[in-house]
Amino acid sequence: MIQKVSLKDGLHLEDYAGLAFLASAVQDLRAAARLLAPKLKGRTVWMVNSTAQGGGVAEMMPRLVGMLRDVGVDCEWLVMGPRDPAFFTLTKRIHNLIHDFGRPGFSAREKALYRSASREAAAELAKLVGPEDILVVHDPQPLGAGAELKRRTGIRSIWRCHIGLDRRSRATDAAWEFLRPHAQAYDHAVFSAAEYIPSYLVGRASVIHPAIDPLSHKNRELSAHKLVGILCNSGMMKNLHPVLTPDWDHRVLRLHRNGRFLPAHEEDGVGLMYRPVITQVSRWDELKGWMPLLEGFLRLKQRYRRKKGPSNRRRHRIEIARLVLAGPDPSAIQDDPEGQKVLAALCRAFRRLKPEDQASVALLSLPMASGKQNHLMVNVIQRCSTVVVQNSLQEGFGLTATEAMWKRVPVLGSSACGLRLQIRDRIDGRLTGNPQDPDEIAETLDDMLANPVQRDLYGRNAQRRVYDRFLVFTQVENWLRRLADTALKPRPSAPTG
Image (cartoon, rainbow, N blue to C red; front, side, top):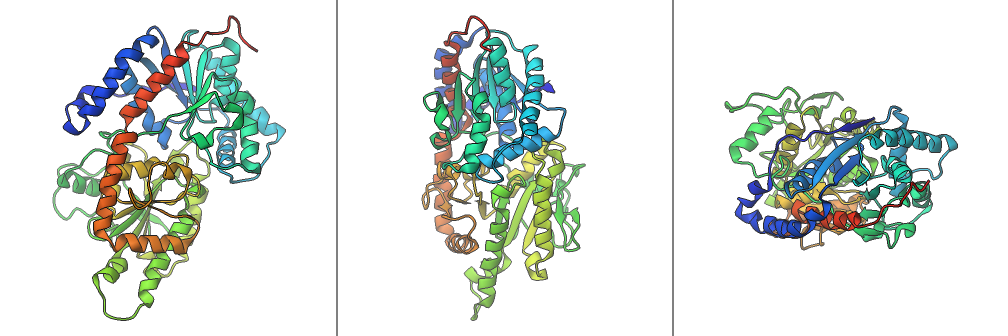
């Protein structure tokens, strides 16, 4: 159930410090580490989450753990994988309820399942974690396991919750009440926004924003030759000329008009190098607002088809624009059992479209067999996009928006709290007031596509905002402060329960 994740030998702080545009950020982190890292000497920090691939937490973890090690902290990464698949079905429902989606309330069977899986995981954690160590548990899945270990041993512990909602409802209250006895067992909690902190944790919680690694495969700069090579290797573009590297074993699939997922380069391909492209890359989750985005894009197209008069550049841009909806192969994401259903619903919607609308939409399934290759695919898709959209109905933070902002790609976000934290409307990008309103989406996309100078300004402002607030160096420094503070807390002389 509990597995240690081994990190491949990757980049170190010296690699970042050697780049002029990152040197200052590295210098600030090292200065903070000289004061804070000695306070953690002799302790191991154990990071625990529920999956090693497929989500924002799993993507952040290698660099967070690696940089903590770089500044002198003994840090390990563990993944909790319960034996009963129903556990992840339950925790997905908790996730949805926290975002005000789903039926409130939990059965006795569900509560027993959560307790049982948590106790089993806690027993395995107890074999690894020492009495002076610090346990950092991420999100609701392993929350109960960490709480159980805390009760048994009194270990210093932090719960890092990456999800939340800036309003309360019956659904959110039900989820937070379910988690309450487990969350209250920890010494401290960390959230992505102050608005997400439940009332019973006020005074015992703080905020650390998620962050991206600027040199990861998903975010690093790509030369023109490398970008084209990735498009060809991944199957998103035909090899019209020889490329340096061979085709990948696992390639991108696109939903074709016959209703089947086939190689993406077949028929007319994806067109990333040629067309104006509107892109959303996310997990297949109803809360990502896939359907309203699809409908909004189609309405934008329909408006220009109805307009009479000679074609001009603005109209032609809309005529040839393509919507790319891309997400991971859902079978590869262990802790998200709803992914298959959401993708199936999108496939049904696609099959109902008229042929001319089908030609304007590319629904892509990105393989997960290689994390590096998957991240490079996302990188090139975002860099080839005219606008990157994150149309989330609810969003804890939204690192897909952060990634595009770092690449200077203009972003259209929703009014979800996590996106509002990042994007200042009409400064760093655009925000819609209602992500379920296709007409508002269509109007905002039309305005963005019609103003390339404004788009360029959004992109430049967005990159600076990410540099100042949402790079991994700031995140690691904030974690050093939180861990050092937790290390100073006295442990109880005996287990508390």
